[in-house]
Length: 357
Image (cartoon, rainbow, N blue to C red; front, side, top):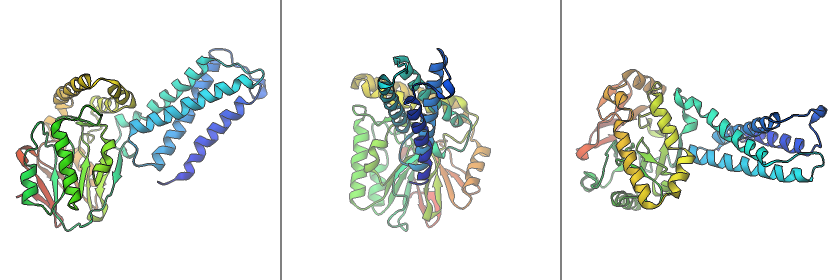
């Protein structure tokens, strides 16, 4: 956590709202007729939500965006309900259910407004998160890199590579399965087998990291199962000068994909999936997988060389890795890892990345 002083901002906004709600009328005897009174609620509680979102971005690196937004909305909605309840006891102040609706709508609007940079910017640190350790216990051990395994029923190549390199650590750079949704009732047998394998490796003292790609959804509850679990553009092992991201967010012009990414990982979708019966949730996962086959296809057909070079240049003191493109490319200090199909894994050792033999 850092920059805790920024919490003064939402506290000041909340204190101002409380002070105003204690007054029998607005300052200077200002009167706001409908619908301006609802607009005032909309703006005030929107500013409160925006200031809370800004404070949480600055102090917590381990909260996914969907959980952060749900938490902010819940806090603002509860605060708004308490404010409306309190006004029953203030003479001269009107109190309506629609005021609370305006409070909640303002929170939703401003959280959406603060998400707009996701559509065009590469400054996406606040939209990512990570949990665990960004240091390996023994950096001299080989680090096996697996990008885009796209497993379905079989964990192709995993057990063979483990038996051949029992001393190695592991880093998965996203798209481990065709689709993986971290919601109870949606886990497949292959995913359970993979998590058992992770537990085996960690019990043996090995470091195992997973950096989520465009086919992983809501896996943050699995944080304790991995040495490092994260999502976004800022994956790294700083002491080893190794940095990475999945690669799906390199293209700042692919607004259609970014819109899909933001909506499909939103708190609303998480709540919807959590409420669905297991069978319906499985059907939804299958549709997600089919949709991912065509989403962003135009961008995947050609390797985005300029965007890749710019992202690698941002990590000029480190080796920069991505997956996602299913092709092996080298540009300066950047390497796009090949598709880990049929167990074609790579390895990081002695400051170099090469095919795992």
